[in-house]
Length: 198
Image 1 (spheres, rainbow, N blue to C red):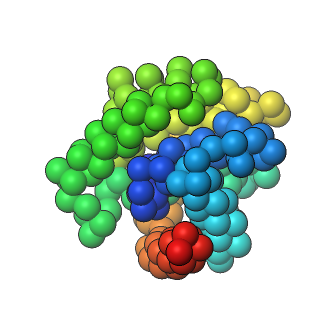
Image 2: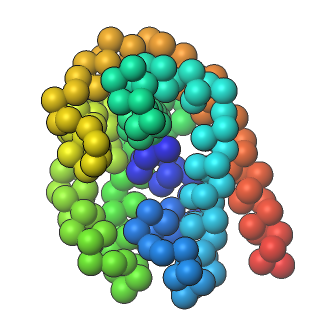
């Protein structure tokens, strides 16, 4: 999953920070953070493991795999944030805006734990309000272009965004079959985390 989904599947401020940090730290460094941030790192990994093994995600990859092969999962992650952002059964539009603002505030309040490369990205994320704007096609285009630019073996001209547009109904169905399961799984992991604190 991508940034919005990970932030939504965080059950405390510390978990928000840990969910974002996971992709920016070395595994051996995870224990240098406060326990609540470690919990977010644990949650991020649980979310990714569950996502990677879910049949609906395997189906969703078919929208991109003819173009990008093994990179399909990265584009599915971005696509899923579009469907999370437009899922008004999770939050109203106003609640999604409030959620986005809360995430930026929490991350900035914990800047002592953030690596410099993440701080640079966070400034851009907040300035353009990525989290709220994942509901917009142009934000998905921008995010997919970023994935292409960072991928070592992919041409920046591959029409992955067009594949997203062409496969929206199919990807929406995959999301519908997947996200309730992921949400239930994340809540279960959080219960185990809270039990571990007692």
